[in-house]
Image 1: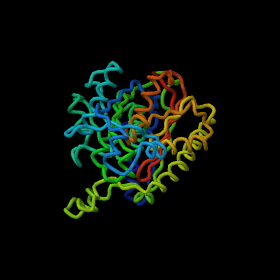
Image 2: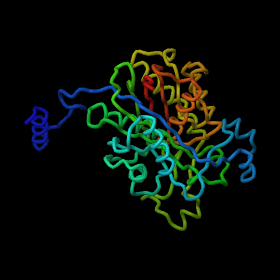
Image 3: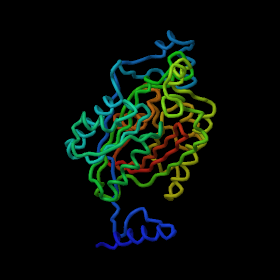
Image 4: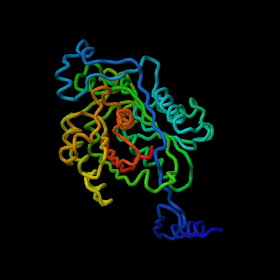
Length: 360
């Protein structure tokens, strides 16, 4: 019997005696591997909803939307298209680019706020659609931080040697929970998905370096969908009161997002002995152009290092970060060896930041 197993059994026995057991994050003698993003792919539905289209639905204008949010258009699914459809398309593209078969994937984590249904998980739907017969998986609910949280969660499985290849998907069909009579929210959101394959880096100079995440549940009411869960199950009343749509306190969200983006990014960089000048590319969740620019200004990051594509996609929630990374790659702004800082703030509130060396 190995030493680590004996220690675990002793800990269990000690717990029975009222002794607190504290286990290390990784068992003794476990070699922690550097983990890299081995491939990246995205998928958005072909239908585009422009600001001019929204002018016909609500009291708004293209100028008002662009000035307040930075959004000019967003992609919207056709009826019957689910989050798993977008996620599966992005996942298949990521597998192809990684040179892997679906059977090579051992873990699927899907960051989403708009699962196909409450259960089973969207991860199960994607697993079936792409034929990842050897994978297990689950959905991760962190709203706009869904991708960054899923990325770091899956990375731990690769780092410890539990798995060789994992699939991380950030996907949302936000149009399914948006009230298109509410101009404060319907102008913001779009539908889309991104996926990455995580694998052992094989080179300590590339891959994920560190991350920092936190939550603040006191901010829950500021951004939420009030009904549809166990607190307010679906009923005639919840439907009549339009409680199955996104509700947002924009000012509260704006202030929190700017403040926490700066704080968590500085903390992560400081912990790794880095300054903002060392960052080659800053990829923030695409919630609102003004939020991104305000946080960037506070951090002192040059505009040339900041990725903003909200004008073409809107806020796709868990899809924004991979969509922004994909744009940076296609525009030649992201190359192998670049130091990349990812950041996200979402409903909850959830806050996240990831530091990595681009390996593709």
